[in-house]
Image 1 (spheres, one colour):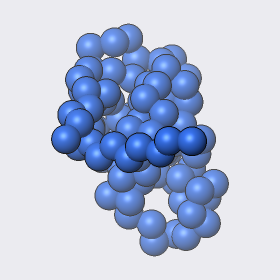
Image 2 (cartoon, rainbow, N blue to C red):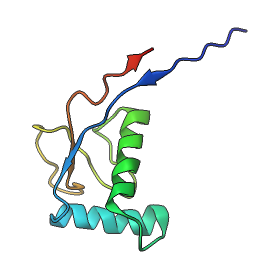
Image 3 (cartoon, rainbow, N blue to C red):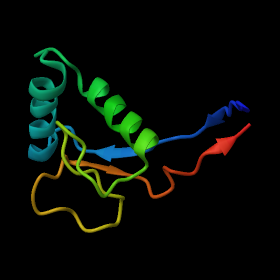
Image 4 (spheres, one colour):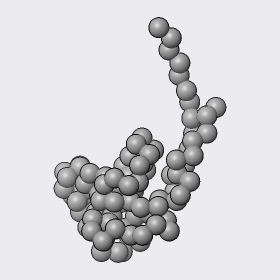
Length: 96
């Protein structure tokens, strides 16, 4: 059996308006469903979103406790939009 380890770097660029109703609703849901902490920050939620997008690489599925995070320029979902969008090149990973 052979084992290989790969190191890679990448970036996930998120766009959002923290004053939008969608973003506030997503943050409240994240606090309730994911962390159970009322003092969870928006930064922690965004880190969770970026981690999910990096791990699963699929912006077409709903992120549990957050909602949908479409690519900038794609149509916004009519329901369960998180108020967050991701740059279209988020899944470009660079291997060292």
